[in-house]
Image 1: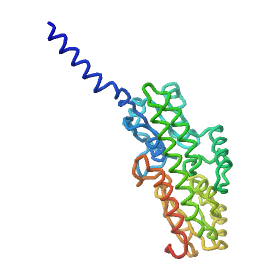
Image 2 (image 1 turned 180 degrees about the horizontal axis):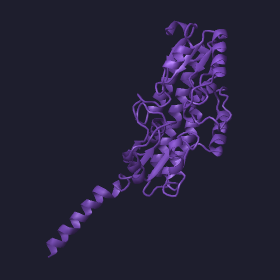
Image 3 (image 1 turned 135 degrees about the vertical axis):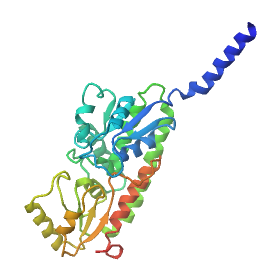
Image 4 (image 1 turned 90 degrees about the vertical axis):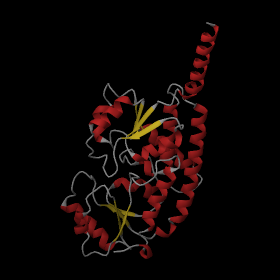
Amino acid sequence: MHKLISATLLTLSISVLLYGDNAFADTRIVTSIKPLELLVRAVATEDMHISTLVPPGASPHNYAMTPSKRRALQSADIIFWVGPGMETFLNRLLTGSEFSERSVALMWPENADRAHQHEHDSSHGHGHDHGDSKDPHIWVNPQMAITMAETIRDSLAQLEGADNAALDRNLETFRRATTQKEKQILKQLKPLQNTSLLAYHSAFTRFAEHYSLNVEGVLTLNPELSPGARHIADVQSRLRSANNPCLLTEPQFNQQWWLSITEGLDVRFSSWDPLATDIAATANGYAAFQQSIADAALKCLPENTEH
């Protein structure tokens, strides 16, 4: 009997050793889009499971969620999304009774205010983003990304079993890496100061404003709708009068119609991906994402682009 009790206690002790420190391992985090996954992976501890709803090649503006994605939401301990102005397919679900207590919207007026303060506190002497909450593509601005990462850290720290010290270390590592990359990109983009950039839609605007790039116009104000004739005429007029104009396109949207709009005009093209489709989902992914945007912009230099 004594041996049986000892064996039982030994088994229980081994179980505690094996699973006690991994009680948080089954925590499931769902992000709406890939860029948010990059931010969460930068802050989260290694034993957290992270998945993303919008698949590669799809747009969060018009994504139709599959049953498997709905099940992922149901099993999630916490859900991160930009907010009602971005992932419109999630508005009803994440603001409803089933998911509202588990979802964290990263774009609210107070977040924009905090990001605005980051800009003023920055020692770089650049950046002109004023926290305009109308444009939901906040993750392309590195200072706003830091603000989002802070909110992610605060939210994860509330979960049962969270290693707050590790979350703090990860956040600080992300903050330093993002600030360093920001300084590098600022130097890289200086040759673009005299180049007129046009964007497919507003997703590029926050990045451009932060790095003081010259955006002459946006082709479509709403990517879910085709632009009107008057707006197209205005864009074409801007292209004709622009200095070395370059159009930044996005892989998620149909390219055929803007090819026809620019036919016969002296316009360069470059493609960038606001959804970070080809960026590895690692703790260092956000810096790589920022660099990918800068690289796409640099392809607009006359010596780097093709007509």
